[in-house]
Length: 165
Ligand SMILES: Nc1nc2c(c(=O)[nH]1)N[C@H]1C(S)=C(S)[C@@H](COP(=O)(O)O)O[C@H]1N2
Ligand SMILES: [Mo]
Image (cartoon, rainbow, N blue to C red; front, side, top):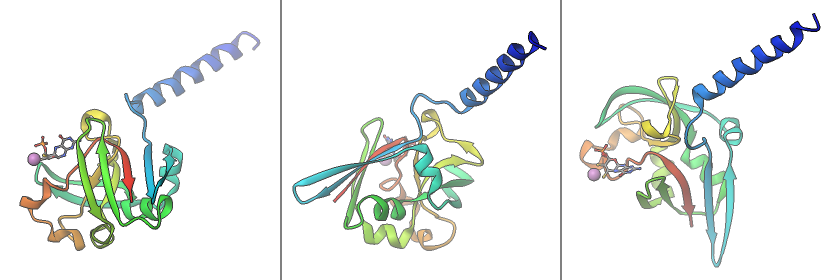
């Protein structure tokens, strides 16, 4: 028994290591939010734990580049109200420094895009649009007004941070 215990502990360690490495990515699921209020900017950090503790939404939609899939994530509008409630416009920056600038909060409230961290039950890794991917519901709901021709100007993946003012 004395000899068994370390082996059992080792087995558990190896199992938990392989479980965590199955989801591990070169970048973690997290988000930095820079809230600009006049001359002051405060930084809000949302960890994976914070993100998963927020209200969760799922959107089943197609995009011009992908067939219909189910995305899970948090509402961009909820991130704004949690981190920078007086903000009226949002700039989104990706790990490759691609940016979508000055999205009106009024449109975000109307279209309710989500910051998705999973697609069809699989975590989005950096190599497949992760860790966060802005998804509009094109196949139903308010976001269905968004036409294919407008979508490329709205689509951003591999999101690293938001700047809200
Ligand atoms: N992170 C990131 N998101 C991005 C881009 C990019 O370069 N980086 N390109 C945008 C553009 S210009 C388009 S048209 C769509 C689709 O890009 P793709 O055809 O390269 O997939 O993604 C958008 N989102
Ligand atoms: Mo594009």
